[in-house]
Length: 344
Figure 1 (cartoon, rainbow, N blue to C red):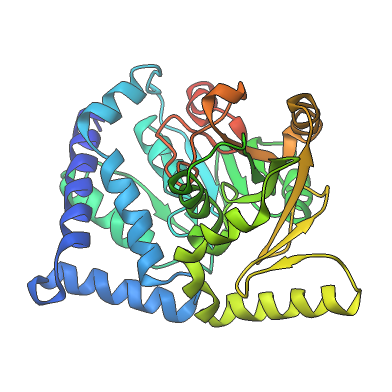
Figure 2 (figure 1 turned 180 degrees about the horizontal axis):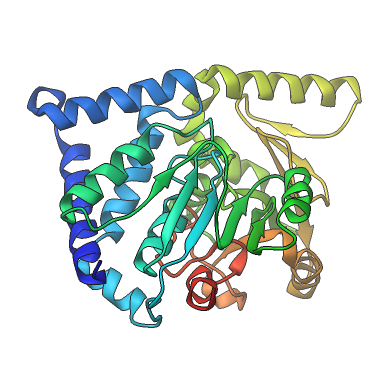
């Protein structure tokens, strides 16, 4: 089961995904039609998984899955000489969110034992079958309803679920992930184009991902109107029934409680120190000095997935518009999955 054949097959899978996402429906062949049907079924079963967002996730992976990217990433790690069974409990908050764990396990020369999320159960089995086909049958994996007979576990869940998982797997080698969110720090001189990129960090996947920005830091003299004006490209988000229900509910609660908030009819801004915010709400605070922002980020480090900011602000950050474009060497909760898989 050479790593080379797995990499080659994964590159072919990347090309297949790219070709699929750019084709028109009239040009679909048999496999394409099957894949398209799976995407439609996924959206029916989980309305958050719109065709647009599923194809966005597929395109992000298609851009990553090439020989140069994969070899550069893997050059820092050793493949295991003794394959182990690694249980994977996958999240289902955004499309393909568990795919990185799967390819990490396979390319470490281990066998993923995959428990899919009920919210995202269609796409991954199809892609794994295609990868195995492109690799001449050299990609071992199992799909299971319950994890049994494993050597290590990587599991993702809510904070409440994580407590249960930590107890359940207390005697196993494990990575247990919890809720996280992302923040953005504005310098104050951002162009309209840069604020529009920030909107992508906030609204992509309806804000359901751990890399979505839910908390803003803005300078004391920054005009809220500039934020709303540059979010208009996402105004159609309110036409999504489940998002609209969240928006209407949260708005009603704020009105009943006579709380101060800013509203543009599809998202609300609330001046609030809380890191996490309800869906359709962005918490923000104004700052006088960046030291105040650094103190907040340091105090909440365990709950922050990414910081979005211009590089000149001096944070360990990613650029505006890059939150939903993680690289192969970007690890959830900042825990190096590949290093973990080297030593199990």
